[in-house]
Length: 385
Ligand code: FAD
Image 1 (cartoon, rainbow, N blue to C red):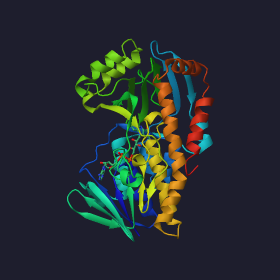
Image 2: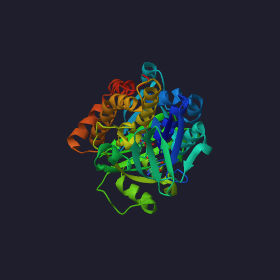
Image 3: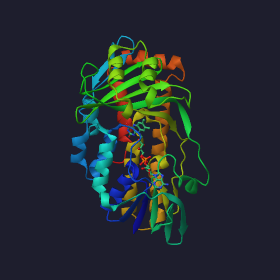
Image 4: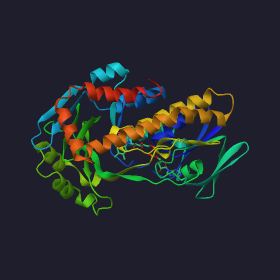
């Protein structure tokens, strides 16, 4: 049995490692010659961490993860603490900790776990076709690859998704822009062991520790799509949007490097229940594109990989049956994650400012119990709970 995997991002590589681990022959085809992840870092929540542990990367991941022990929200203007609590009750109840990690390092870890020399870089798939006992991918350079099944992990702009669904999908602008990057830890901005968030005006500024004495930072601002802003204007843009905000926020804006700060208009795709057609399965963002508001897009891709590999390995009725079982196990889970993230997105980013203000008020009486119980529910919905 051989699997063709299209896409060498978090989803494609997790799937390739998982299938290889289950004794399957795999070939990974990645469009670009060198992968440059879109964001600076990512928080891997315990459901994702468990998947990477299962894939044999437990020790490597521990080296990359930042020491995130606490979570806190601060009021935007004076920086007063709204709530601060330990993440330990969550860790104890789910059996694993979260790891914020730099994306480039996560990507390298996955590539090394699979074996860099075995990845076919610079191979952009143009079309696929199925025949009685296999599936074929044709690449831009005319090369073809054939296998028993094909995993489409080609991201949110997937060219294979229309083949599976039978129609095109529209990406939906979520209404806000996210700037993100890495900066050296400065404890006068935020504690080094805390996920820190300043909130106000439907905007937020957040910092999480990653390994190597760095904060992963991000700024969110509700804005129209398509503004003429880029790296060249990042400091003036952020200074304008966060004018009057507390001193640590101003200090962070002064510290960031515009050259390595990303500006992303956040989108998702209306969830759909079909993830599989015949011998072809959608995985990761190709099958479920979410806003990053609960930090679960990459984790869900890791979950997909584990479920897919188990479905294929434990099935004796054939590839098509195994993929349908994968779809059955994943469709509701990923729909739930996309819709939860959308709901969180709207509350955080002031879609209805009255609702957002009620959330700010709630935070002032938050002991950690409500927030952690919501996170626990999301985490425990994973395949390795
Ligand atoms: P991608 O990472 O997009 O990889 C797809 C790969 O396929 C790419 O390498 C691409 O080059 C390749 N490809 C595309 N087309 C072709 C083709 N035709 N042929 C061959 N190859 C092709 N998730 C979390 O879990 N936690 C977080 O904290 C988090 N934060 C986020 C913050 C932001 C701002 C954003 C935008 C996302 C965040 N996510 C987070 C989501 C996460 O980044 C994605 O869910 C994850 O990267 C999806 O991985 P993927 O492999 O499915 O897709």
